[in-house]
Image (spheres, rainbow, N blue to C red):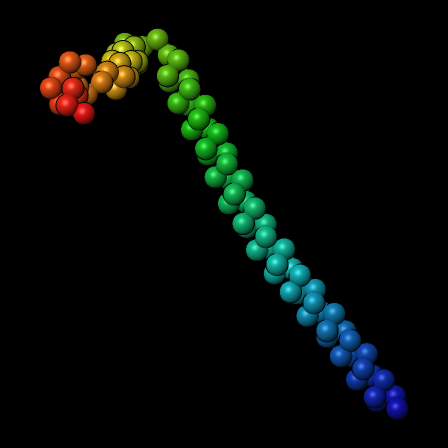
Length: 91
């Protein structure tokens, strides 16, 4: 009887140890995934702040870039055809 009780207790201790080991592995995996997500978020926020700072700068290159962007935006607003073109009137 004592041997049977010893085996039952040993199995319970083994089972608890296995559960604790599985919990530790899941905790490490979760921490690794959380660290990857947090680092990607911080990289994106740093990139966003850097781009905003460069865009707001008063250097000649950035002023030229802003003028180029506004020129391209004006070109995209223009219609492809003239209002009195033949193709537009036939439709």
